[in-house]
Length: 167
Image (cartoon, rainbow, N blue to C red; front, side, top):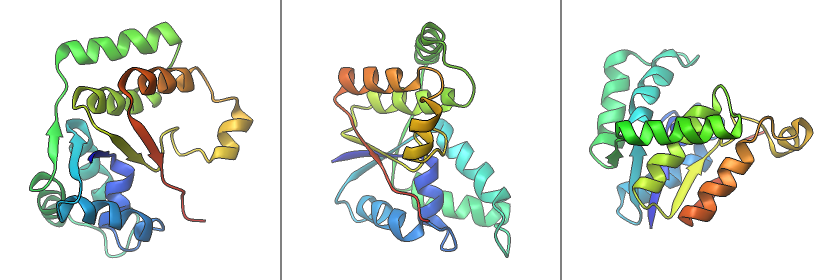
């Protein structure tokens, strides 16, 4: 299966102290052992570095250790999916047409990369920017991101797996 892991899952898989580590690690291991073909959006590599080097863990993850973690767990194992100028323009056009603003833009880039790479599944912890299912329902799914999500899923046939966050 062609599986795109987003930054939230990669961080949880690589950081043992992360509350979702036991959920995320098997997803990374499936890619590393060849059970699944792993893909990652190019911008997620930079985001992963930014998150790892600022994560509030003790001891802190140094820039050198973060680079080593990314190299051995992502760059040496996953296919990196880059977006073209046209891909970025298409995302911005769709977001503006739906009235979507803010951080959901980065979720949309994940969807665009997954669609471009013909993945079977996206694995994420934060498809809707960290909201729980109850929070999503209570907020009315702020903006129209669910419409974008459903449209992307319908067009691509991609399965979205939102891993339950640890309590």
